[in-house]
Image 1 (cartoon, rainbow, N blue to C red):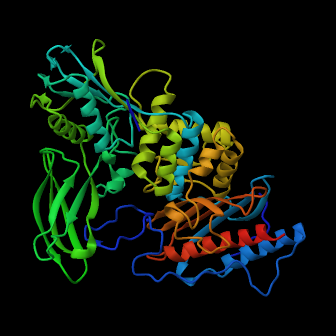
Image 2 (cartoon, rainbow, N blue to C red; image 1 turned 90 degrees about the vertical axis):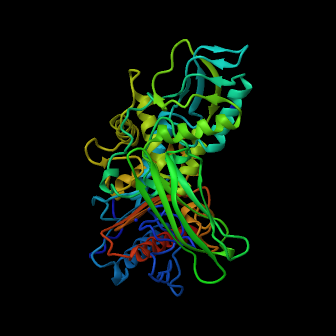
Image 3 (cartoon, rainbow, N blue to C red; image 1 turned 90 degrees about the horizontal axis):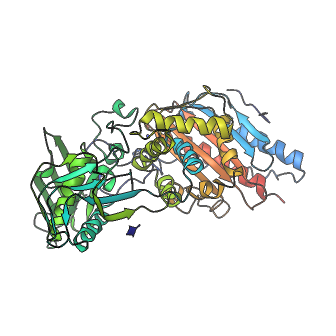
Length: 529
């Protein structure tokens, strides 16, 4: 087996990975969120936590009044570039539950990827941090003496979102070690853990988007149901670059044209065009790559998870010397008489959620959502998206304490127009998760750490802030959100939600500057003896 409230002061009035050095000219970015400002927009100067000439009071009541006044001043002085953008803030003492500052706390906002904290909390509460997904390979009518399977080779997927080409290659090797040499039937995939609707809710709002972050969801999937286009410069600096696809996908995904030259000067500029045909995906790659660029990669989604994984498994089995009939890859149930040949267990859910939240992985979030549906059903039947969403809503109502019908959650990742929450509700989620010891440590540990890792590694980098913020970011075209915790010791952590919507084009960096200034004010408030 392989394993992988009350307001102290009320002033009146899209992806998270850093920009790549290379330019992918395919109109769209790998992830729908940015860390470091919008392309072509200068990052604004920090607003600062406080006027250095104004000492922070030591007395608790006066210090709290200072925090309210400082937060109100930050919002009142927000950059003019934000125009009519709406800002909602809720800051709560995580120990007492007392609201410290609220601005438009009951306003309705899109969460973007902050939605993933809802998926994370529900998954930890309903599945447990030690939950694992199992993928298993079965044989029907297998004769160990001859190594021949007179029937089909079956693979049952249980929704593992972490399954890689290496894991599939290891399963093929395990099938070989079980004695299989020849499969007279074909490859059959049992994906009945999920229903056949692979497109998550709201993903159809951008039907032409081919980036990897919009991949379909299936009970059996490898590499996040996306393939990588890899471009490697010619070592002489003069010839054509090598263009390859990862993982191998047989005839399902193929290179139609590769015209990338290697250059000693100039920028790397590569265009990737994907064409979806009747039963295949073809890729055309053109442009130039600098010799010193190293290997350049970008990911694109596939449309048929079973075909994609099946072609890869067939190739890995062939690499183990196992002959498989060239029959079409099919779906079907594993017979009750079939025997298990090999299994692969995923990493524990707690580890998977940590990776998911720190990198803001949409594919994992949507798979976790549908897994919640599968594990929450009273009867054995393929899970639907509604099953998963119902499980999240039950957690929010029954354990977090939100009023049923007072919010809207439409998918597990926050992509597109899928959410409607208030800052006060999200602060309540953060507070409830923090206080529940069954899930709190894993929930907090899954969040990016300011100045250290994930989507916050380039924010809160000053010595006074580094390591003191744990929060989930969210970005869409006109949305920048942040929710999490801030603390300077273990005694007085604060939970917060800062949601900015209706941001003018290319001005999200200014929204993040407001968020950062508010959190820096919280740090100054907490750091006062």
